Image (cartoon, rainbow, N blue to C red; front, side, top):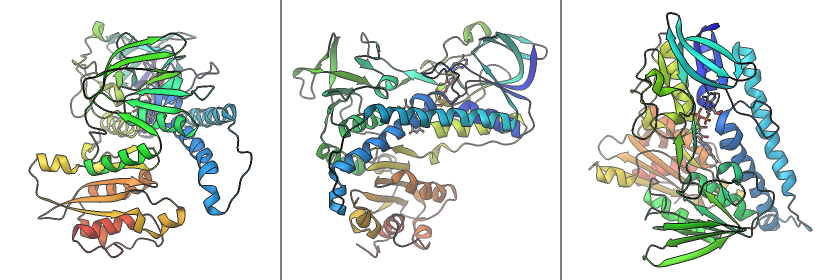
Length: 473
Ligand SMILES: Cc1cc2nc3c(=O)[nH]c(=O)nc-3n(C[C@H](O)[C@H](O)[C@H](O)COP(=O)(O)OP(=O)(O)OC[C@H]3O[C@@H](n4cnc5c(N)ncnc54)[C@H](O)[C@@H]3O)c2cc1C
């Protein structure tokens, strides 16, 4: 039995980052992960790298390039003839990007002296030297960890009575690997994943209908931004229905979905494929949690306190398997914080400044409070918006949809939330995160020199608009 200061179960963004940080801090560290790639080889990086963040962004980029070649290049004076979709090559490129990321983590483990074990890890028992963790792999092994970090992630949630077969009813895994563009694609769930997957296949030519149970479209997003998004997506041909209740799904050669619409009328529609993206379930399968008394909460998450401590001494849990937003960067932050706490430092994660991004076109990104949250909390605030239409760089790019919106405390001017719909919102939001982390006021951003011409000027202008003094609109 090999002993380590830290044994991490799960090699996704939470687990692998925790392992690297622990090793950097001088702790003897092992990471156990059971993922295998399509080629059958161990594939570090978890959901994010293999069937999540990375492949989805690869396909979003490729599909956007394809769309632009067919629809936007002529405006720039570039005439293309014979544009054809080579989906096999697009998927091959996506797989290559994934493998580069898998291999990158192997390299990082070697560099940082993290020992990697491929297989499924489960709690065996507590011993005088630490927790014994059994690995069901080839070869099987048992490790002892003074500390254990559970980072086992999440699995896609299926519709009741309509499990994933990845042929007709697809999770994110199948949605990222369709070998043909379906003529009619149904998507259940208009959340981040549903919108991103719907966008990919719409741009490649599918007729896409998205069915959402909640009455409001993008309820977690600032209402003004969500309204703008709804208009843009409708123009792109994403048919989104909200307030839908699915009553039956029948998969034979095609998939028929029976549902009631938001007016309560019974509807039935048939798709070639159906993507189900209605959330994710924390993954505690096979951990042997009950036998060792690891508490699982009522939502199926490993129960943790504010510092990611579980019900067991020296056992921590992070990422999708615990409460909080299911985001790769949240998992990473928790991984770093826990490694630092184990090393006697004061790791910290600020949930108020975790950014969110939806990588549609235009992108949607935000941090902090929405206008509706501030209203509900009775906070006196001022709002400033600036449209990309009035931004020189956006015009030059040919991408002027959307706006930046700042929300600041009416009395102190402190930035409370920033919401963006527009080009490269995923990159622009970083400035807002920094501002909020440093407790900046809107005026602080407004007085900072931003490069011209750049999209970031829209950030400055929206901050100026809080005091009703934007310069370019
Ligand atoms: C299509 C899609 C797109 C996404 N896009 C984004 C995005 O753009 N940005 C973003 O922030 N988030 C995105 N996410 C969410 C993101 O992927 C997750 O939040 C993130 O992967 C969670 O990281 P994690 O380390 O907690 O778990 P995971 O990434 O799920 O990793 C857990 C790992 O542990 C392994 N494991 C589980 N149990 C065991 C065990 N007992 N023994 C050994 N190994 C085990 C699993 O096989 C897996 O490899 C996306 C998700 C999907 C599905």
